[in-house]
Image (tube, rainbow, N blue to C red; front, side, top):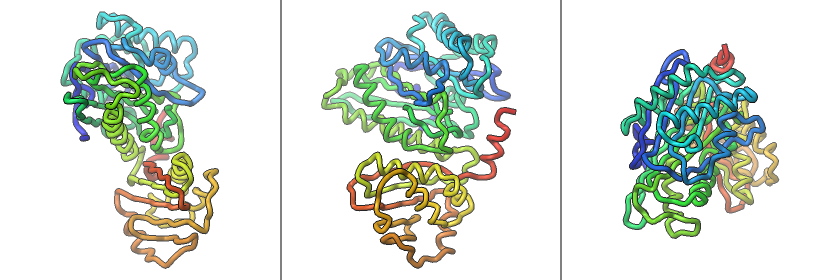
Length: 399
């Protein structure tokens, strides 16, 4: 598994483009990803009750074995826009299909940006035409940049695995920096692969992968109206189709998990205003879900996140957050450490150098480890700190 430029065109038979349609004040803002042949498609989407029109449209079209393209815009979420918003999402698919000479049902749609504003369809129409003209096997890097909003860097990752004796490639791009606490099922992820795989197997693998990657990610505890993870598999690697129960499912899952985990970690590292990458591992609860619930509660705590920004080893905030996570554990069994520095043992503080702990927290990468009992489960969550810039970025986002 590696990070690369042009990841969505790394697998065989994919082209992409990223163009400027004028939806944002500057930079590329429309992306198009196309398979040379109809592809198997899967998706996981936001669990927010308030869902954007493109989410509802794309969700209705997967899983499928006849999707050829995904059209994406940044700068406008097309959320909370009523019947006109759905009509605009449908029009995006239709216009893309017309440009490519395919069926409108073979096109998925995704949007990200400001909620509650109507789509500027004149710009969208022009952007789609430009994207179709610009499609290239070298267009993956532009597509990764075109889906960004408050991101400071594009996020890309790839994996190459062997299924039978056939090399199979997986590539993914993602955007997200704020309003990030995916419950997928403003985060968007698009993954391509040249593997041959059945629709139900791909949907199962993608859902499982999202559970151990994107659902272990949080920047600020807010779940977007537009969270979408869409995957296309075109089968051009030539392997025997992977089906549920196949001996090759585990290998494919391993490669996919490598890509999604890398993308999730890149999103956490690029959190709005972030100065620290914070990894939180919780061990010893009865189940994986309990460990993750504790870890995410800590990761979402504004008090913990601001302490990380201030390089303050205020471990009481961490234990307080763990204690309100809704998971029963014995406080007397707790062990807490930051890096190699143990702060709490058997539920009680132990002597440690506050200067040394402060110095550790000046690092870019921070590891917090909490053991809450003798259960065999463990979960790791990725997050970042809250800085002054997080408030500034979000206070001024709409205006």
